Image (cartoon, rainbow, N blue to C red; front, side, top):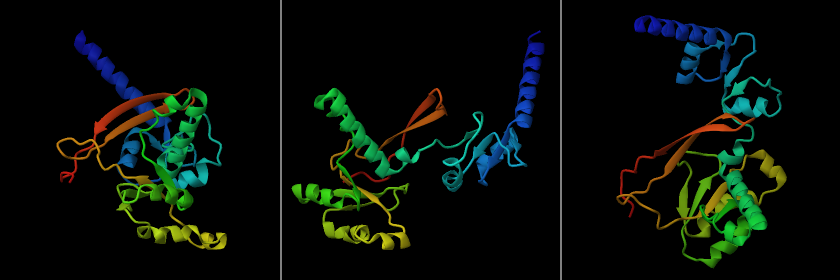
Length: 233
């Protein structure tokens, strides 16, 4: 009896998998493991019509913002995701949130929003940054490109001359700016006494799967990033 039930369940699962593969059409602009998985689970789109699109950022920028999509279709990005994934936009939103909190709940409540260090966007906020920089001579600051990842382009500095070449780009005319893409940075006060585990720096990475933005549902998984090989000195 139990064996028959298990067999029926197995048949039902296989039928469901077959139905999903025949009904859901996917589009994938990448050639990697993701495409292999989609190919095994769904049906590739052949007529330009699709239900799920695993796209790269280039396709997203050219099509997603300006296109109308049916309610049932899904892609692997959210609208306006750059507001969180680009460092300059993220810090702008954090500062805006802190001001809103101070206006609506008072300074005491806004003071709790201190989980990110003093930050400026360069070259646009260079003059404001210099004022803060001169208040604490000898302090260490860290520069981060707004749209890069994996630690690329990050460096520490203690003197303004170390970043002057980057700032000069910000003083060019609009015509000159159009000729070459200017890379923006965020300058943050470096945290010189971070919390350590066994003498090593670490960070927490929180992965959130957003299943819907119409009625926000999500699943969360938190991981501890492996420690660097060398102890902090």
